[in-house]
Length: 217
Image (cartoon, rainbow, N blue to C red; front, side, top):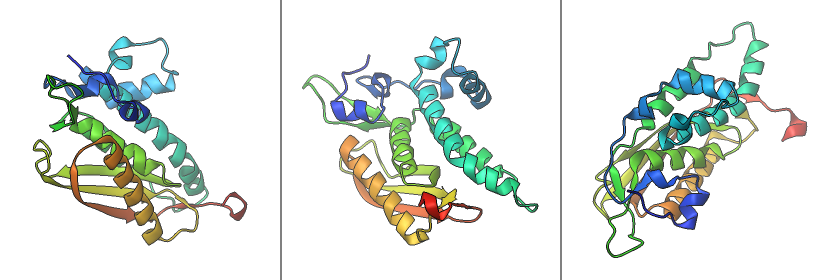
């Protein structure tokens, strides 16, 4: 049984199955593999597969895969011009983390829409919100995110840790990018959750970022 969603959660891309009035623990990716989802994306998500289309975890992964492909394309093109180009292991690492983070995880309390409800948002949905917020920072991809602390207890302090990578270098310093990611994540969590976020720790990797031409900055 799921609850109706507030407008702000719908705007964040959280589906009704992510916010539950009863605790549910679906299998990770609802029986699908990351390779199957990548193939489904390659095929233009046709023919429609309800087991994927109706799965919040699968939809979160598809959204993240789309952002990874869009942002990593320019970086890989730049690497291809370099005879010492690194392998794209970092993309594989990001995709692996997306798969691991997609499962529901713990139930995080939300203010009830009705007195008779006990509303929660899944940990996987919150990680998706963090990833989506961080990915809005120009040229950045979120590699991994974790929620540390007792997120199941209202008001308990929570530490959010984010590992990100600059894949397209727009000339901003690592410190500026770190601040931008932190601000984006902080705003998203404040808007869409009731967690008591004690700190947001962001680690930025800059190695291998593809330079952006001056005219595109």
